[in-house]
Length: 229
Length: 374
Image (cartoon, rainbow over all chains, first blue to last red):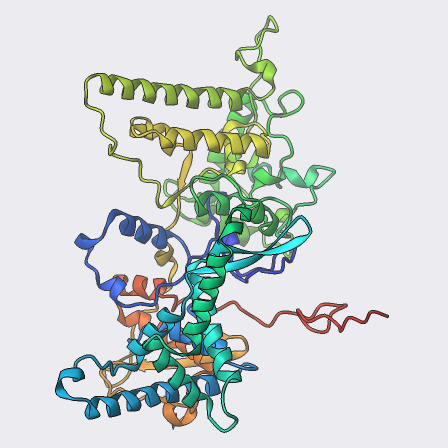
């Protein structure tokens, strides 16, 4: 039947291979692994969500990847960080380092908590995940620079950054900082936990780098009109 | 038996001398409109999708016909087709009698089965096998003669060459004007509201170009099709377009509900009355089968050993195969809503990703050879 599109739904290799292509048809939608989305009762859905649900019921869905789970411990930001730290596909080692980092951070914070006077105890954050997210937030630059050629010269022009780019830069700086600027004998998780705790309290080299980028952008304000998008 | 020989028609396409290159299930150069239409309702096509998505849509008889509006005079006259229809119906009854079944409730599926039984064919080509179908499906739709005895054409747009298409465009625009007039009248009476009831577009798609051609019995170009969709979208952008809902729905087709495609095996019971079900899954080259028992202790054993000992490392591609197998085994225990939730969480789709092939002139799938200046 001409009306059925079953022929389109099989995995396929496109005839003309572009650089970015996937085994799925663009007809497929992304899966939703979080459990709480499915527990919302019918009455509390907004019209957009209702429409999305109806759309999902008629479209095929891609398979969920191995790294994505429905459990409460699944953190997409943390997964991204683990992937960025990974070398040569060795995710076990990267995940091990991150786990050790979180444990280390927790130990340090708990030690600080027990040593602090009663008044200060409430302010000390012990949850390593909260610290990680907040540290990453503090490292994210707000504005970035792009190299734009005008009249034979290259100028550093301040440009707005997308959320993904900001997150990527924060993670990249954190990882390069921990790999390069450490003593030969310090282990990665040790250095990483130090940097994350520093970033949480808005100190440390990574937030310094972010501030330098902001200053450069501010000083190059005059070239902002070179941006055409 | 004598009458039956005339009813077995081989599909007319076999007789045409030049078969179109886009025959069969090859990846041809038809553009994939469905993705364009459903992906984003407001734009008709995007260049990237045109480049990437070259896929033949379906192998219906429509695609093999070069000219729907017959280039020459009518090949089959109305009386001829009527006669064929009568002969088909009589032949159907004869066939039902022959097979010993009730002629009143003899469906097309029964006809196909009977033909396959009476005339077993060892041929591989589907188009060479004997078939008995309703003449409307066999003979291409064609247009009656478009002009009268005096030579004057009936339709006022005959000399445009695409009279049905242009008259459809005119109709659509007339509807749009009617909607705008309705809106103006409401505005005059102060009853105009922005949030009027909108036509529900979710779960349906625009007619494909081929389907539109079939409807109009006329060949149209992609540009024409694009303009038509644009005009319909414009009609839909008006707040009170629900006035012309019937007209719009005529050019939309419902999409099938995906969850109905899941095959849920019924529960099996072993000798103690405990319900169990099996499922199998594959990922790359790993294969796994799972046996799920109801009301158990929750222990999981893989090949005899405990799963903790078998999978010391959290990630393994065997785990992907097992996940699919477990999801499929669970289906028989779950309700419809839960099955749909699992499908939307991406647990029931087999992962199609495979190792990308190595290309000639490159070292691997993506890696090129080291570039040497000299």
